[in-house]
Length: 504
Image (cartoon, rainbow, N blue to C red; front, side):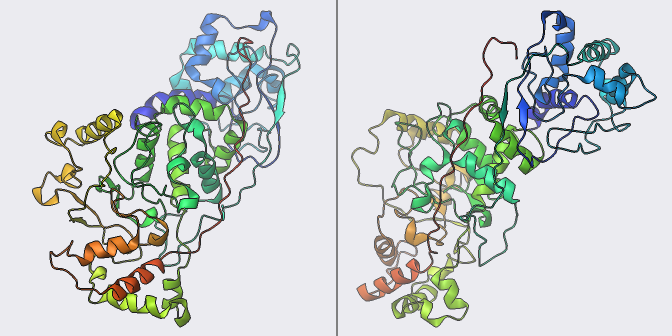
């Protein structure tokens, strides 16, 4: 991220060049000039083009004659040469433009595309970043923009998107979320979560594997990787991830670092296979996205803000109240007699609550259960699966990764023999809606899972539960799921591309 900022900042800094160039929320529909053609006489020379390019002014402004200067953030500079003379009575147009660059707080322009321009957004050291010659070239060019040579500009209207937290973004009833997000950030994240344009070939989205109708999993024993690739682990639900200490089945990522997990899934070849730079350019060609980013972050689309917005949406997907929660709150009828008997077993003889603890019913620890491998003759049929499997563990630094024939689990991180094929304790919230089970989806039903543990998978000693008690425990486990929330996929906005070759 630090390296990314290093090459992004120079463009952003000078894109805020004139004192009125400021960020602010989009609150009304506006007609946005995408860049207006100018006469040949006003086209800049190569040195002037280089000065503007170095500054990155095109990222935030409409500047006639400057290639790609179709920015939506700062004010339209098409007539700045004449407008500047009216800003401060004691300054000429040239002196005003120069002062705006060198002392951006001296005067704030009266209007930005979103309305009033906020103060204190211009960096105070632009004079140090530009040479005197570059500064003069920019000032001289802007002085020539009086609006007289500008033809009628192509416009489009930004349709305001209502900033309302999606109904599926629940407030979890059993704990306070460690991080809260604004409604605008959650809404932007939802659009991005469902948008396949974030993938390399615009074919898959986050929602392709984390489907709302499957409780934000995909209902498959083995996750879909990129198209045509069978991935080697079950895709877990993304519900309640804000409350997890570890992410991934092997715990290879801290629970507080969801943006990095989002980054990996967007960029890894076996997931969405995208280039972050290209992805941001795609997003910038969608005016509604520019509006949503402004609403959410007060800034234009960027790779980091994309990761943060998707994180905001994912970490808002929390369980509503389950029958178990209602029972704890005093509603004795919320749990059936069978489920109440299962609760007693869960906390007693079955010993489930030893590991399945806390608000998500997970102690966030790692255990080796000798989970069986799915009996599927086609499980290794896809040669890309072999490649993905090996590359995954090579990245983790796993010794002899080419010789692996089973998933080593937590061992890949610790290289401790005791962690061989150990996986994190699965959270049990929504467990009734997230079949199949275990890291490799080997069990199709909760009854199969309970019987696996009943046979002594944890302690090596069978639990001795009867068929009736197994059914009671399953009834309790099903009571840990909340009612499904109807999730409506957003209607994704379309591109508004500038015509190629028109120097706009």
